[in-house]
Image 1 (cartoon, rainbow, N blue to C red):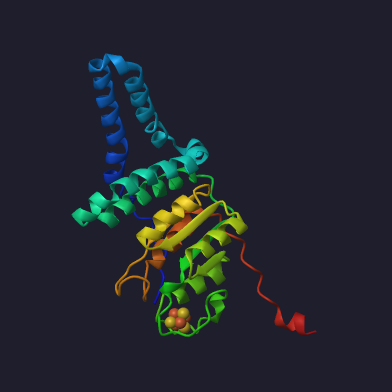
Image 2: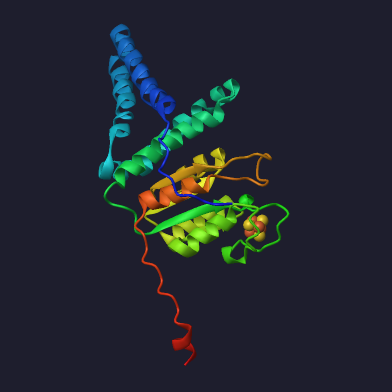
Length: 255
Ligand code: SF4
């Protein structure tokens, strides 16, 4: 299984952005109309309208301004994602809806880190990428992988050794959040299913994150997979490369 670095794919977020901006603006316009009709509560309607429109403004923030408002913006955006999630579920487009939200913030993070790459990045991976029948104790130590070529962990291990990534493979979301808070990275690159990506973005909203969805060819939490080339491309594009370790001189160390 070879992992090839490629360029980062374009982010798709038109669906999320259309509703994230369109709904508050539409409701704000309706509140203004109500103010024209309902004179007794005119002030309240205007306040509602201003409040709704003000929730849209941070979605236009970019670069450092985005990073400053990111935590509150992610939480607000997640509110809309959750509010409309049942609707998209009935349409059979739930994943598309959540990934559109993820794509919006991926694009913002990419833009914010242009020319100012992360120096202390952390990769978070779910344990279910390990083949279910494999007994290698890779949680806590990726190097325990036997490199049998059967799952993506081998690719991650090679990249981790070569590029000195900080990687955590966890079997519980709360452990991943705890690891991220303890390490205090300036960028998280996380791989997970759409539901956990949404939760993770909210739980660790204060840290910029670039997220990559899992493939679920065998259903949830079993022998999942992901595009390791996408992970390599994200790390190459968004993080400062670490200096390679000097090879050990075996003769010198033996003498
Ligand atoms: S590549 Fe490593 S972790 Fe994956 S199945 Fe083989 S030994 Fe197990």
